[in-house]
Image (cartoon, rainbow, N blue to C red; front, side, top):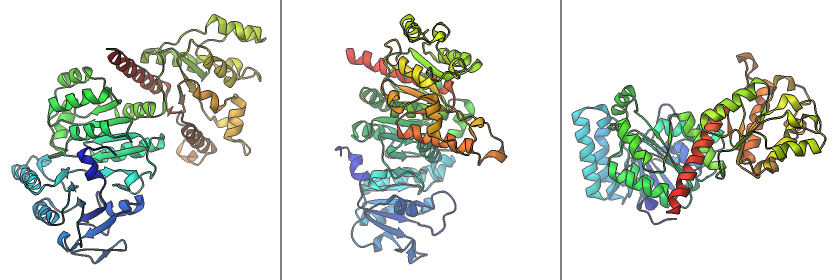
Length: 481
């Protein structure tokens, strides 16, 4: 554990959920069930005067009725009731309050904005830190904190600070399907007290975090944020997705988290002065996270592409070059090795390796060529295209048989950075239970288990790899000075 002030907040031994609900319908209703599902080992106190029991736990009419102290409060009470709740929280020595409660400055209404500032002033007077308002709060699996009961219980080394609660939910669930596991996730909403700079500074010091993700709509203190970002990117990769880049997005921001969208030119210039990695879309955001989570840093941009056929190989080369990777020709010594081993295709094969050329050869399999390429010093990284075709829908067909047919071995995939491309199956709605889909899901699970990141298209894999390489090279150059 680091010595950052947020450590105390994020390691509560007791939590009260104020305004707890017995229903599981609507946003923010499942905080109590999420804590129970995640296995929070401290004391949990439901608070709502309407009930005497919720989820098998005694329910208290108010915070003041709870015996002993309370470390952390999750608040679902209406905005007008927050000041009274804070007074009650202070009587129980509460250190931090997560305000799921919304309808403050994001409404644009003067009275709501004034109430938000009154709440901040009162919280500072009482010595209580505020997460939010208008946010989903904290997911910290190692400590049993969560705002969704379906989140993975396993911890990982990636952290996320998101101004949007729904987007935080989507990133965790989508990322989990790509193999990501999180150290901590903080949805912080309007950020009237603790803000993006506080969370970034904390993640920089957190020994459980190796990669940092941030979804940002606006920053509270630009100079402080970019100073913190510059210091953090010197030691850990930071991937940022900025909301509100266009006019419509900027308008939407004001009614979402009451942030002021930064001018695109100013924001991009500031980001370029740090080693942060900017994502252009949510899909790229996840792709970059997956790349940094699973891959070691490639030595360069020289890529070997294996597994396409015909026109797909041609397009693969185009997409890799468009993304900024170097699709180098097969080295002459490589071809000579093939010739010396008696393969008549020695002068025909190229990079990308067209699988249709060797698909009828038993010795010269995809796996054989791939293994030879991994031993060649000319290649820095590899993209391997894998697909379960419809023709494999046979009663006795298994993933092991597919790998045997291709001659692929997972241990070979760890000699250099490897990115796998696993396209979505081309299925109609009537085929959703098909064997092809099941085998594709099994293939992705097998790749995750073996630490191989996968992407739905080669273009997305290539762009994520190139941005990772650029980031690592910038950091290496800065470290040299």
